[in-house]
Length: 363
Figure 1 (cartoon, rainbow, N blue to C red):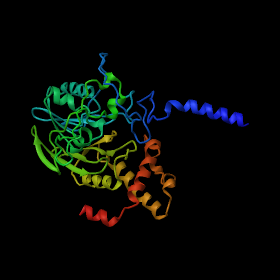
Figure 2: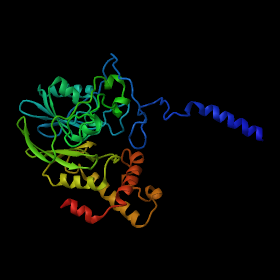
Figure 3: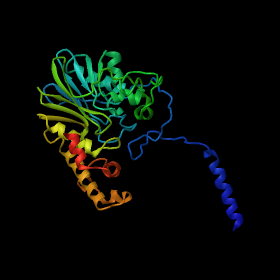
């Protein structure tokens, strides 16, 4: 028996030798995602510069209102199979230019979206506005800056978290990265989808909600702060009664709250509800009428209330995902993958929650 145990120990040691001292191993399928919607491979991937035919996103714009058309992405995670086309982006028709809202997952996506829009009106894109820092919404930026000379308006957090700019000024400093990090899309997508994509900085940003006019259209760029991500904004067109809200609203699927907070999400939804609008375009999902935000309001309200009830009932954090199941959303896309993680992170957030603190913040 002892000989068998010794032999097994030797075999186990031999098998383990390649891994001793290594912090990571080769991932054969780097496009695979973990439960938090993050790519498993975090190492540098050689830039892809092949010459094969560009990925065809087969983009078809949908008219939402008189001056707004949008491209609606797949109701799933970003994969090689969908080439990252899983978020919504829009075009707003100005007097002399299209204004783009969120540029999508790649240079090629943005290029093909603009080509589709030029069939409606042969206009350049001189202004581009971004909702938040998640890369499925803005990796098409450099198509607009390089070919259209567009100005990028967006969250300062893009510059800080991806390019290493100063967190207070949003400008380059001695810590600015010479080589920007590769995002999950750049690591994961086929080279004929991600080819040409580069990280470019936001040129124009604001510290608070701002009203401005671009190409003859009045806008209100509304800061909702820490909600779905570190810094979320939505775009309100008062004359058109349209609101473009990014990922603070999703419908038809469960949201990923990996970088967000429940209280911030609810505050963002209140800010959206305070505007007079007839059409709403979510960051993910297809419902754009007056009911567009209803699912998000219900989800985050139930999430907050039920997690707080679980904390009051002294449910152990290891069991909170079994106690709070949000059955009302079981038939929505990505429920099984994302909702348990949302519940657990909400427990971590709300464990220290005080109602009085929220009321003070709102005031």
